[in-house]
Structure formats: structure tokens, C-alpha cells
Image (cartoon, rainbow, N blue to C red):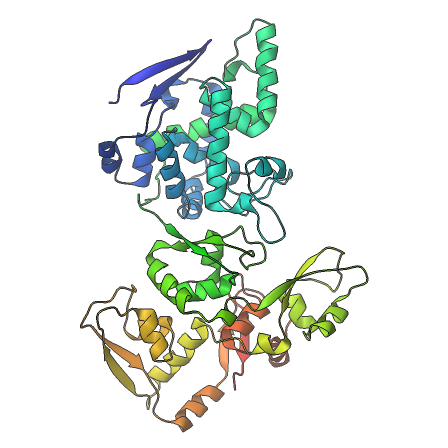
Length: 488
């Protein structure tokens, strides 16, 4: 049991564990799981605080048996990074639970007061802590930038309130002025000035108890009838600096992961394209080598294929479409517009031309479906390839004109790692007539959550208007809806 020190502020007693300095290497190693590491890094001992406000919040969490199951699934992308940053600063690991209270670890959360991101920065506070916000990028939703800003802010508040983390957390919720005035009001009346004695806004009165209740459950989950989903104490992502704009759908293709997964790691980019200039992209760590190699080989003209346009007075969709040689339907789909109405200053993303929209390079999904059909045909032929030193799946797939997904599927691979001397089967085709026959077969595509006509058109190298012509479409696509795509 670590040695405890007692910090006393008037009547409010808070026990601190390892209150100064970062956790030792031995402690970190023995934590084993991420929950264990968080538990071992608790500095505020919630079991030492007997307060009915905590009890109420703990019972509320315990009454929702799927709470941790649902929020842990969302947080697994980000939680390890937050814990690492807190550990490096020697801050209480209870603070890693604040985004659960703030946003449920949802980077797209937006409050009525326009607070955004997992740490719920309002626009003004975000600017104070250098979180850039413009039409391309919102730093409040940037996982790494917002975490650094939040920890800077919490550290500042902790110093402002003489090392009292409960007052610092309360101030994070309602502002340092709000807490400062409540402290002064109690002091003027000769009353205690600890958190539990202050008259604060209703939300703030429950804010700290929520975090302490979560801490109590994580400290002894079995005592509270809770099962914590297993989370590995290992990094989920790595950061890659890019020097020019990149379409996030193209980035996902390079990493060979679904676009929605890539966007969840990079939610700060509001146009689904990185902002102009040098920025960091977060990539799943197990896809880092493939992504970096593929990005280095990506032709300049494939980084991004549309541009930003700010609506001016007198503009309408038809005029803009005519001016830039883009179909109105394409503009609506790209920008997810429900009508043709525009407002001055609204930012639209424009495909460079109608031809560029319909002549996109086929995505990995299209390649995977085509090569899979060829490899499973009775007359299809295959070739064998022996892995050499320095090879990777991306380069092999590129040399043979197939996708990484189809290569993995053909060889039943569940990882991108290869070993020298390993023999791979390369899907192929017998002759041109067979190729033509296969190419003319329509593809039946089932719409997935997050799909749009634009993304499907890109995936299958087909014009949006052709998809509309071939299918009886309503205003919106529905997950599970089937589309017939004639690719010839």
C-alpha cells in the first residue's frame, strides 16, 4: 500500500496517494491493464470521502449496467493517450475520467453552450488555450491538442486554488470566477471554503461527485456489481505529420481501414479533408507502416480532389455548378445538403470537375470485390509470389494491380505482417473475354452507416448520376438499402 499523505482544507479532507511526482516504473509495469494502471494512479482517495452526493451518483451509474460497456468501446481509441499524458505530468489519473463526465468520450459531442470535443471546451476558452477554430479545423475536437490544452487548464486551476483538485475540477466545469466568488462568499461569512461547503451551480454541485463516483466503481468494480471491459495498456494510435492537404477517405484507403474509423481518430477536420498547411493525422498503430509507405508513394494529384468555396451574395447551387462544371446533384451529395438553399458565407466543397468525380481511382473496397469475384470464378487463374526482404503487403498489392484487402482475403491474413520466404497467392484472371464478362456483371452494394452517394461513387469509380439512374432513390440513403451498380 503506497504511503498516504493527508491534505486538509478546513473541514474537507482529501487523501492523496503518491501526491508528488510521476508513478514509478515498477508501478506502471504491474498495472497490467489500462484500468489497473488508472486505479494505481489514483491520488484522490474517493473511499475516504463519505458524502451522499457521491452515493447518489454512484447508484445512478450502477443502475446502468451497460454504461461502461458502451463508453469504454468509444474511449478505447483515446483513453490510453490521456492516461499517458497525465502520467508524464504526475497528475491524478482520476482526471482521465473527466471526459466520461464531460462527453462520454465522444469527440463529436456538442453542448447547448457550444462546448465541443471530449473535453468540452467552449469557443472562448479553446482560443485562450490556442485551440484553433476555423472552417477547416476545430482544435477542440483534436484528440491530442485538446488533451494538452485540458491538462494545461487543469494544472493552472490547481495552482490557482492552492493544490485543491476538487476546487480545480469544479472550476473546470463552471469557471474559475464562479468558484472564486463562492469561496470568497463563504470566507466573508466565516464558513468553510472546501468544495463540499460551497454554494455552486446545480451542475457543478454534481460534477465532482460524478467523477468520484466513477473512481469508486473503478477502484472496486466487483463491490458495485460492475464488470469493466478489458482495455489494453498500450497505445492505440500514432501521429503522422503531413505537409499538404489530404482527403480523409483517401487516407483511410491508404491505411486500409473503413473511413468512419479513420475519421473517429481525426474528428477535428470539419470538411473531411485536412486543413491547409502541416497537420498531424492519427493512424492506428498497427497500420502505421502501411500508411506511411502508401502516403510516400501517393501521386500529388491524388491527395485531394476538391476545393473550398465560400458562398457569395447572389449565388445559387445552379450557378456554382455551372461555373465549376459540376452537377448540382454532385454538389448536394458532397456537402450533404437537404435542399438547394444556401446562405452567404457558407463553405462548400467542390469537386474539381464532373469528370474528376466520376474518374476517381477505384478504392480498396471496389478492388477487393472485383479481385474476389475473379479469384472465385471457375476459370480464374492465380500466381504465386515469394516474400523477399523489405516487402510489405502494400507494395506487393500495388505491383500486381490489386488491393491490400483482396490480397489479405485471398491468403486468409489477419495482419499486415509478412515473413521472408512466405508464399502468397495473387488473384488473377485467365483472359480478356472472361474479364469483360465479369466486368459487365452488376454489383449489388448494401449501404452502410455513414455512406453517401459521393463516397459510393468514389468507391466504385462511377458517376453519381449513373447511380441515380440505375436505382429508385429517395432523398436519403438508408443503412441496409441495396443499390445496383453497373460498372461497365
